Length: 272
Image 1 (cartoon, rainbow, N blue to C red):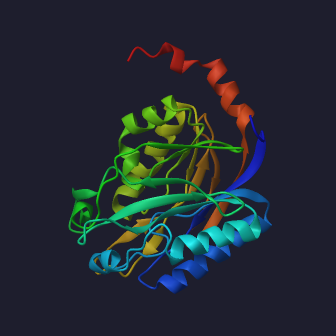
Image 2: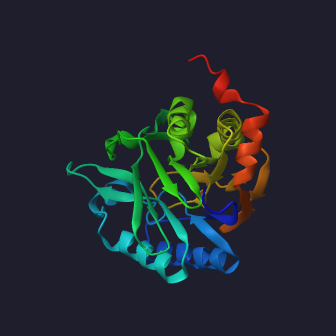
Image 3: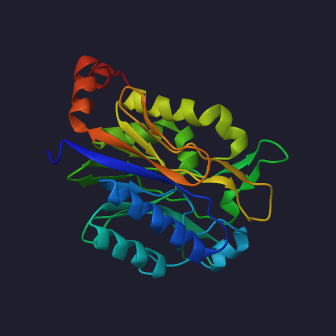
């Protein structure tokens, strides 16, 4: 079954269009988490770049490009499982890229790749207007990565609003649900925690949600909600990041998943 108990960390960043500075900030937090005993560390959506959308596509890289190589090297250097929450992966469409999460093992090997399925096309208010599909190609495949730390179900940000995706991950054996995000401040203040708790409770999984926080230089009024956190399978908050860049750490106890599922066998009660 793998290790029953270990420390996990979610990193909170304020990424901008300065990729070098973004990676330096992310790597500093990842190393800090590893020094605190974390065996698994996750960074937010848009870790390497959160600036003007046209530049996001122009700067897109392959899975073998500098960003992924740097994360692979870091995972190997400090010996942790490391999730690059997302980066702008080059696609076959010259006008659009993928929004892609990549999971690395402690040897720096790439374990899993997930391309964001649900794209953020909304017109909530003057401050929250986005058409992610204008610059991003949607993914098509659900991904659960089997690791010694548990089966990790990969999702990204707006995916959080689609419970059927998480049911599919659960059916594929997910025990921990990963939700790297750049949730807007406007929607996050009302929806971030309720949605995360719902995904944890209904699927009886740990939820790890590293997030962007604060204002970015993406050419608009974008402000991210932050509040990176780790929830247990009962929906309790185990760790919550404070305001501004930082991180949150918590113990993941895989026996807790088994205990919660045994005491309330929701999955065996499902009718559809």
